[in-house]
Amino acid sequence: MRHLALFLAPLTLALVSATGCASFKIKDKPAGYIEVSEYTGYQGAADLRMKAPDNVGLSVKTFANFEGGSLPLWSEDLVKKLGVRGYVLTSQKPVESANGVAGTRFDFRYIPHGADEEKFYTALLFISDEWRIVAQFAGTAELEAAHEKDISALLSELKIRGCKASEKTCKGPQPGPLATPKANLESLEAKRAELAAKAAEEAAKAAEPAPAG
Image (cartoon, rainbow, N blue to C red):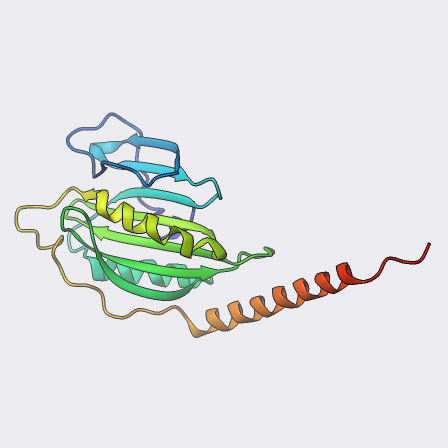
């Protein structure tokens, strides 16, 4: 998945041997997912990609944090950059990893250019002193509800590493309410109307009686 390319592009991770603990740990992965790739890279930064049989994707990616980096700061950055790309933020709420690190869940909807179906994208953002860790679920919008249990399952197993003794970052405050541009929602609603009209037209054509032979 490339949803966070703009958010994280400057921080390329080399695929070299790990030194120290991995940036996150998942004891038991959500049931039914096929592991596509997994590695531990520079200084323990880890990356995991999985896919469900219905093509809903799950990935957990790690990128470096820096001095002053916090959950509110990186949350605002994430929402702003996805907003530029036309995503619509539909909900935001606090979450917590299995080892008690504070995070924020962001749910988005979007219709890719030229596509004929709406997509959902959920990002679970965690910030430790060392890392920015983003768990991502994405797929066809109609499958979102069916995979809600997988998000809960992941959170119950996901342990975030890189917290210092003070835990200031890992136990820090939640971001305030964020939003994507109003124009994004208007555009999404217009695209939904177009897809609905197209589906109705195709259904009407399919229901027409065959020409008499």
